[in-house]
Length: 356
Image (cartoon, rainbow, N blue to C red; front, side, top):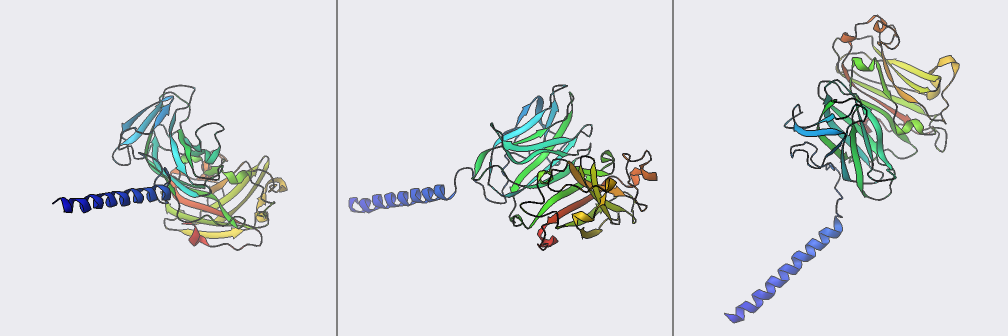
């Protein structure tokens, strides 16, 4: 019996050695904290483990209802002057990578929420999202935002994701199913084309007929040099998902604002569920307020689209007291997706199949 025990002992040693070797290979192949594409890098984004991994500054935090499903994070301001901040740090990100941020949210008074993704410690570099405002309502909605990471060249594990409330004591928010996932599709080649605007949610009465973006990184870019986008072409796609009353004569106009300068151009987009419209034009072929064209080498203040009726009047309370003679409840909330791709001069648009 002792003769057999000796080989068995060595067999156990060999098996153990092989196991340790395999673990070592895994350790070197998958650095700690690095997650594969398609995996959510936010911990407990569905709040099914209570408030684990989340912190709240100037606010109370609990898990409960209302929620998209199960439980949701419930946070409320505790100060009249300071803004509540619900955040999670220690998030791992990959450089120059396209991510999709998605979350379900609502607020008790329809207050907006501002989202930021930055370095968690000074100098708090912008990692791709800074003060991006989302228009919440009293009914829960799903929001998405696509962006490309910036501000670092190697994998980091010090990202902070923050949801910031508006001012006002007792302002209540519900947040659920927060995901931050690397997109499997690479971004368009630099210097060729870029998705500069992507509205993917209902436009409500609160927006007053104007869907504005004031925080996009593309607003600050020089579109004349080193890449000549100013002499390129803007490509548009609008997809109408739902509208209270069909508006077959609807038009959507897209504008850029820069100080006193305003350049716009519209297109017929029938306001009927299921409608998909595409069109394109040069940035130089837009209507110019007082004849002044946007200075494309300098930062723009904001960009966005406006909803217009068959007479080309804005369905808005910002330009008239009577919404251009329309009943806003016949138009809003209108659920749609509106995308704009800017293609550089001399380049060819890769096609809408690359923009789901």
